[in-house]
Length: 153
Length: 282
Image (cartoon, each protein chain N blue to C red):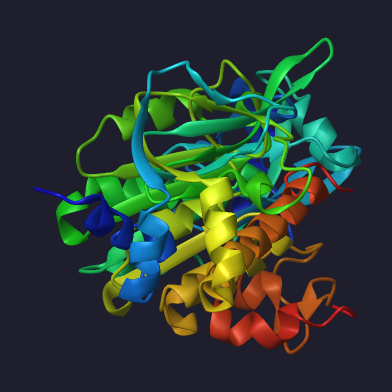
């Protein structure tokens, strides 16, 4: 039988994490499921979780007046979303919606923040991993903003 | 008119003189892109990745990659309306005359790809120069290992060759992933830049060749992402675009450091270009 600790340690985000840290993080984790079309969180709500996708696809969206929901990123197996848990005031700045049935690991943000405060080595490890995710997304966002596929004479 | 065609046909061996063909078919493939099939009578054979110089008479000449199947005997180009010449070409009606010089340049490394996994990474209209390579890979599918197409474009409405992409996706021996930079909520596919697709696929770097075509800035990031996955620079091929005029390395318009894009390329290995791509002056 798969234990949550083993599932967590096999997630790319936690790959190579010291087993003692993994055990600590596991105390804040739980398995969750979402149906296709279900909102995982909505813009403005409290960012009290972050998520690791085990299976399925998730769309990150922002509603634009007159245009409906605009998808700016999709995520799939092995990817993490919900970065707002790290930064006050801990509110989502976009919607997350399951595009298909999604299995994920939900990490309790308050629990993990408290553990990171109590153990700065754990906190530093988590920050480094989130920093990698954020830098990758920043680079990707730059390319999106540059509109490289547009016609440039 | 027959006399004119014959006269021009006689000069076919002269790379400076265009032959005259006629538009046989014209199809709107994306908001600003049209695909023309040109009837040349006896079209010169071409290799995947090569280009022709197309003339819109009275307007000018532009370098356009061949986008059809080299073995089909049909000459097909997909053109984006960007400047005066390319816009005039896209506005040619069926039956209109068009000048053709070529084919020119060094194309995709099809022989080197035999026995290898092949990853094709296309951005926007960059799918057009890759399509001849895709036709050949699929026609001789058994000669190659895993074949993967990663295609990024601006929005779902900008996707090129949509019907063919759907057909290709339905094959069990061809992995096709598309992504767009942004989409409305009715889009069920991927959203994000094309480099994110590279991170998601399994790559055996030692037996992978990557063929990349798209905006130069995209190709730089794609080459980096492939390098991060261990693909050697000498196995990453980029198709470059510059303002080509003579197409035979005589005029210097497309000079890129020590190379001429028209004559030495347009397809180059990344190790040959990496330092040049970093030069802002180029």
